[in-house]
Image 1 (tube, rainbow, N blue to C red):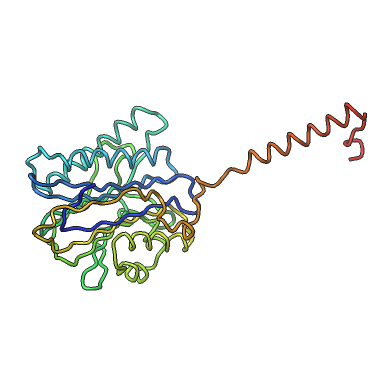
Image 2: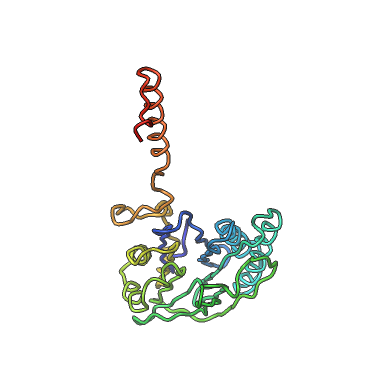
Length: 297
């Protein structure tokens, strides 16, 4: 992926220590000259415990991306994002209605569109956007969720609805700004002070990995995803930079990451094999020696 030279990106995602599947998904995409430059970063967190959570997050991001990153569209970033959220809601609803088991699937969706000098944010659910400026981390989104007694979303994409009610905001950006997109599997585990401390890591990729790793050390009760974007002063001759996307779920330092449940070898085949061997041994004793071990039980 080519990234406008005014931005530097990092990302990391992990299933966590408890969940079997990763219902988080994220999207990074850009428009480059000859059209106006635009960087899109978005995270969708599928509704945990609901059939199709992973499918909902994937469908929402695909619909959002195809709308916002349409190079033939004359719309400004604000309008692109509004249409993108509308398209995401319609796509998730269509897929849910096509499969009865998926009728209640849903997802959060938080998207950051960065153009030269300004940012546009679209948000629904409880994935958070932070801005780090002058060493201070500030939350730029409001959670659409009730934390007590259970974590319940009050607004989302899908959930049986074909429409959504996202929040939108536009603000200026400066060179030196850092933006963090974090699912609740990260910010819900780490104290605000720890997020602020880790947000100051030297590079966006290092920061994203450090945030997810810290959430795993904190118990990793949920999927954990982080996207980090730095706004830098572009060099006139820099053009675009290449973003490596081959890291997968875990960084190169594999020993520092626990294996998610979905990647651990299952135990039941070995138990089944042991039981089969035991039954075969009993049958052999009966056939060859006429000895029944159960008679002594």
